Image (cartoon, rainbow, N blue to C red; front, side, top):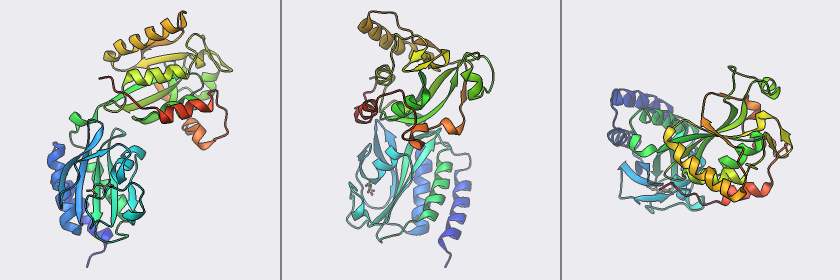
Length: 328
Ligand code: SME
């Protein structure tokens, strides 16, 4: 009998040739679910697609299953929210596990990523305890990269925005806590040289603003809500100064890559201006360039919880507990 690793090696090759040139995500998920199921004889093997801010049942093999799984619920919704594979050795021990079938005893859920956005999850259930381990996780993640090459256009709803809000350490921590934000990185935007170092930006001679690049799922959170939250973390009337940080690198700015976003940006900015009765100092411009900062600066406050932060801790709770709204 072939061991699991060998079976997966063969399976991966089969899937690779099966999918060669195929572009329709549903057709591909149908055959991938089938071939995995036939290879291992699991209890249930299938996909849930991200659609209208929930997970919706997709192609599968096995008994009837629940059709809708909310964000953050069950193993599937948790894998979506936390954006990583979850191996569950015993479903009874997983708080909030959704039991579609009483036969299911262990489970693995593996997200399908497209440009860092989760577009679906692969869910596999077994009638035995402890069926899945890191070998399954590794190979199923590889298989999902093949699935991700197909066209999920109608279901991704991926958008992006670049926000300068003073020191990017605290700004990133705050913004990425907002539900629906699927990716964040910090870097330098709209300056006048290529590949600036932190030290060069620090001179204030290169024109860059410390900026957080966000990707978000617009079926969960809209730009309007994101910007309203952004304004809670800045003093929009202050020029080139946020908290104790001073200089053009700490200016505030909203930099967009989709010109269609301009209307919503202008709307939120003018509402904020009314509140303050003063002209705002927030720059609104198309993104001209962006250079990712060193790894040292990425997720800085997660790595250094007592590190410098110009934002009050209460803001992080606000972001964490916020109920996102879409633009529609
Ligand atoms: N157990 C899953 C629900 C889907 S079924 O297993 C097919 C969960 O907790 O998300």
